Length: 114
Image (cartoon, rainbow, N blue to C red; front, side, top):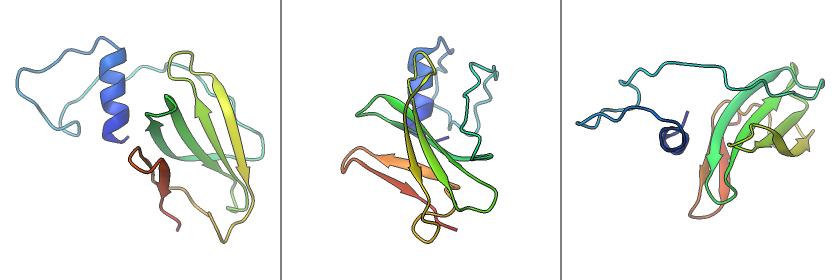
């Protein structure tokens, strides 16, 4: 989970604030399932996740078992409903999306491609 997602969640949900800043990795938070996101049947693995601050959406990257199909979902952070879906099938260009992050300075997503 990137820092933008952590900050967004902390602002949307009533999460106690600490008097002294602590790294998000060190700060345990209670986990609760907020929603179940319906995925296309052609993908079976969710990998990368980030928050797009310009569009105000969570972004979830999913692939199929042999890495030949990728779907990127945009999810409304308030309703947790899928608002957009982008499908790719060029393995040599995208492949795995283990880590996904968004750069608001240039409006681009970055992902690892293993």
